[in-house]
Length: 126
Image 1 (cartoon, one colour):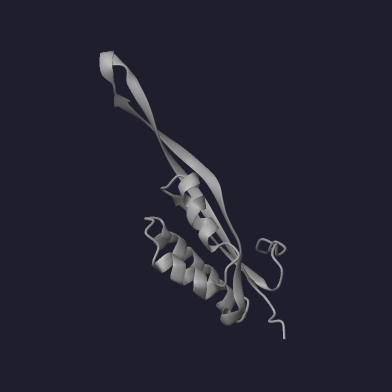
Image 2: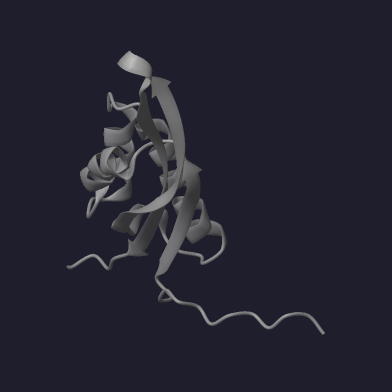
C-alpha cells in the first residue's frame, strides 16, 4: 500500500541528474552549463576537466551522475549520449551585512543555485 509512482516525465531515451543547493550564483553557473549544452558526453567531460572555472568540478560530477543514471537505470548506450539540456535555477539567497562608513551597512547577497542536466541517446545517422 505504498505511494503510487509518478509517470516518467522524460522519454525512454533520456536520463537526468539534479544538483541542488550549489553555493554559486546562477549567472556564473550558467556560463559553465552553456559550455556543455548540446555536446557529446565525452567532449563535455573533457571540457569540464580542463576548465578553469571553480564550479566546473561540481558540474562534471553531476554530468557523470546523469551518465550513470542513463547506463544503470535506463540501459542506454554511453557512447551515443548527448547533453540535451543543461539548465540552471535559482535557489535561496543568504543575506549578510558588511559595515560601511558613517554607521551604515552594506548588503551582501550570497546566492545558491541548482543545476539540472538531461542526457539523451541519439541514433547515429548512417
